Structures are given as structure tokens and as C-alpha cells.
Image (cartoon, rainbow, N blue to C red; front, side, top):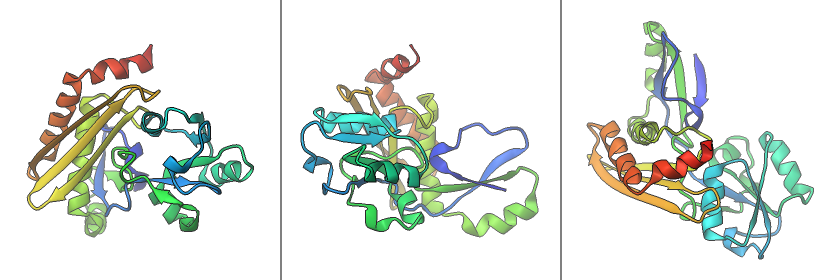
Length: 231
């Protein structure tokens, strides 16, 4: 088996391999981390914010066009060390990753309202061989129905938009009874244009809901925004 962060899992799998389980989702949101400032809006004009995500970059720039957003790479420890050396005034990372690594105390605020999450963020998926019934039976208890439904809707939206994990696309679904509510976003990297869409659909067909939200975004010109990345 292989365990993946769902935000990094492609839609298509190699022959004889499949996604057999999506586990219960941790926080899907982004975490604001700073040694001096409490949240994104508390940063002074011209502050330097580090992120490797175009999705985070476009939404942060839309909220605070006065900030200087710089690329931040490396594992979590490396990124925190760069913050501590004063290379950045703040950095933005996935809250779930911070908490899984025991860095809860470094999280100053959670961007649950400011930033729509990446598709599948906070959820772990388990990949295995398609014909391995023994392994599937062993991991079946790890399947979380609500998380699976929501992530399936988000991934279907991303697939219709021909997106990946390194594009300014965001999607977040939540279950409400027998319905799913999905919000989607596509943005210009500099934050000057943000497209949003939202729809509700039955839990019986999360993929249809994902495609519906994607079509709403495409009608607003999402394909043109995304095409700029490949020029």
C-alpha cells in the first residue's frame, strides 16, 4: 500500500492500482504562522509572506495586495527555520500538517475564512493493488464516508478544470444531511481576479456536483485564467 496526502493525488492511477480508502479528514484549512503577528490582516504594509502554493498566493494577494509574497520551499522544519531567521514575516502552511508534526503551538491563526482550501487538503488516501482483496478488507475500516464524499466532489471539480496540486484552484465540500455543498475558486496568481462558484447536490453523486461547480467556473472564464499558467 501507499499512503498519500489527497491534495497531491492525481485523478488517474497506473494500471492495476487504485485509491482504496479516504480516511477521516483532519483540518482542511491553511495555518498562518508568524513570530510577531497574529493573523494575515495584522501584517504591516509590505510584509513578506512565504508560500509555495499558487492557490494561497492568489487568495492572500486578493486580500492584501500590499504584501510581498515570496516563494517558500523545503520541508516543514526548513520552512520554519527560514521564518525564524527573519527571511519572512509570516508563512502559510497546511494546518493538518502542522498539527500532525506536533507544531500546534506555532499556529497563530487558521485561515478558515480568508482562504478556500486545496482540493483534498487535510485528508489521507490509501492506494493499493486493484486485485488485492485481502488488503482492501484490512483497510476498509479506515474509510470515512463523509470525508470520501466531500473529497470525491472536490476532485471531480479539479479534474474537469484540468487542474493539479500546483495551480490556483481551491475547492471545499461539506456534508449537510443528504446533501453536499461545494465551493470552488479559480484565481489569477496576482490576486487581481478571483472566480467563485457554489452548488448543492445529493450525496448519491458527488462527482456530478464537482462537475457542476467546475462548469460554473468555466462559464466565468476559469479556463482562460488557467491557460495563462502554460504560456
